[in-house]
Amino acid sequence: MNKENIRAFKFRNGNENDLDSIFDNYMWFSKLTELNDPYEGYAHFSNEDIDGDFRESFLTSLYEHDPDIGINASIEEKKTREKHERNDRNAFANYIDTKAIEIISNHHKECKNNYKILSLSLEKDNHTFPAPLNNMLMWSHYANGFKGFCIEFNFHKLTNSLMELNNSDITTSPVNYALDGKLPKIKIKTFMQSTIDNSDALSFEIFSAFVTKEKSWVYENEIRLISEKGGKLQYDPECINAIYVSEKAPAWLKSCILSCVTFKKTKIKVFLVDLHESEFKFGYRQT
Image (cartoon, rainbow, N blue to C red; front, side, top):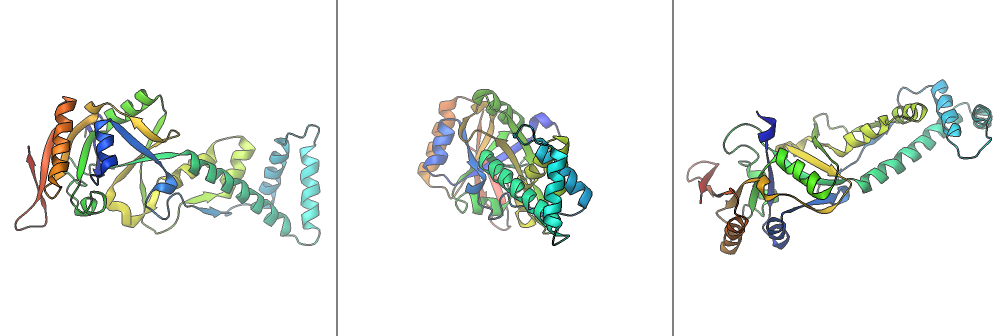
């Protein structure tokens, strides 16, 4: 499959906002908290594979980054360790892990607030009308119970257009589906190591949590465009390959979409999607 011709689909209910976005050529980038998965962005913080020496190195590194000039990081680490181990040999480990989780949690929340998401569904095969376009759940859940429409984009053109027209860096990633039913893991050790090394290792694990969903969502075949800019981001209408309108969509919606395509004067194809007479599948008729 030619990467420059990969197709991505956006299902629409057909409400006022959906039509506005088509007429004005923009996509809406949402906060993670506005998406429909109750586990959106969730992660499990794990303290596996951490020993006492590693905790000491981490705390020393924290003190080295302390803005308090004149502090001796090694001496402060030793004082803190001796203070917590005075009555309980595990107290120091608990103190360090709790402190690390607090910092990670705050950073995780900050990233969750900063990242804005556009969700699309990638074609699963090279069929003329591929899944998810022929997936009944997608039409049911995201196109107003098969009374809305779906836009087919050239994914490569859309991504580049969004970056160029909005002067925005955009990262793309397919969603990973957790077949084992486990939440994505953010390791405390990764954070400690990134603090010691002054690296971005933790950010990669947090990012992974933002593109992981439970396996029941796999039918979406989702890919995410991630930006620090939210709300309306403009795109070139040349990115649109086709628009698929349900036969059950109201007449006014069909008329609006046809008028919009005519107004844009592009090569956008419009298909009516209907139900098969004897099988559980869709038919597609170009208008």
